[in-house]
Length: 470
Image (cartoon, rainbow, N blue to C red):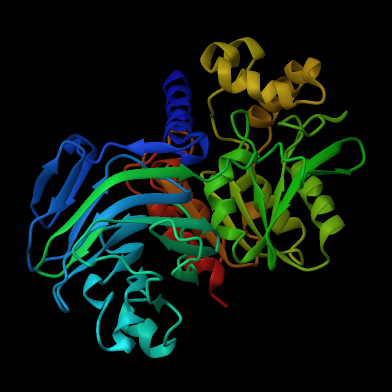
């Protein structure tokens, strides 16, 4: 029990520490500090104490800021290339998932003053790799993702670049000119990732004065601009809606869980879908109600909120307690759930011997005081938190989910777990997969319960094709 609690707390602390949405204000990055950077495929040379560059090489060079995954609203830097025809490409990679998956804005200095005016219009360019390389974009959308540099600088001298990102729009400014040299819409599904300098061509590329501006933090779970309540009978439940398109409902985990744990999912899904985030009774801004908790109650609560928003069927993504709610919802209301993604919750048969839960306010405050002080500050009935936890313990200790529920689920289902989950083992998830006709199972290696904090790229690349498949 204590080991599991420590794991969950560690996962929560990691996501808060690493998420760019929790870093406020502009930051200047020391380009000359070699320890901050991971270099791929090229050698570096020091130019001065606060700048570095790539040595000439036949390989593409990446110079990536270590240990920082971020969503940005602006990036500024100085860059110096060379006027070597067809052999000098210098720029910045961002929203980087790995060495092959990223967006980039880059320059061709040899085209800045080229006598061929067509080539001048290819001086600054956007790519989203690996799906949209430059040649594909040029062939299919000529002139849309590349342009001339307005008041182009000397191709052999330093120039200043500012990239602003107001998703999906990206603008590129050179040497503080108020008119952008390039305006494009992002072609990537990713809105956060690592950043790094990027060079191609057997020539030098040098960089200095990197300044990043993190994207403003969206207060998921406490967003007055979008938050609403719906009365399900004996309780007012809080929910938030983001984006437009086919609706997908997010159902969060229990005890530690809340809407804000779905930050990465919301950013990705809201680009193409209407995302409905429901707060469970006794969590965050939702009221507790007057009846003890059960999985069926959770499912009926979700059903009522969904039907107050849309008469269409919805996709459902649930984590931990939210996955249990998703199972029940899909079984009880098959006309509502078109697809289900269930993460980190397996079968809990009635006869199974299980660990007894006994959460109390004192225990949780002792484990994660800052986290739960924040959670409690959101509660409309903070004086009833102890009662909510008592009902939650009873839910975990006495209620059950088993084949009686799983065999009634008819929609496509993707099950997901970490192979080191201490709550629900991979073997128990396999058992659920066998009970739900036609379901799929994704096991994320090296991860515990909160798999999307542990390995977000693997989780998203498993879920995305399942959601978009017709």
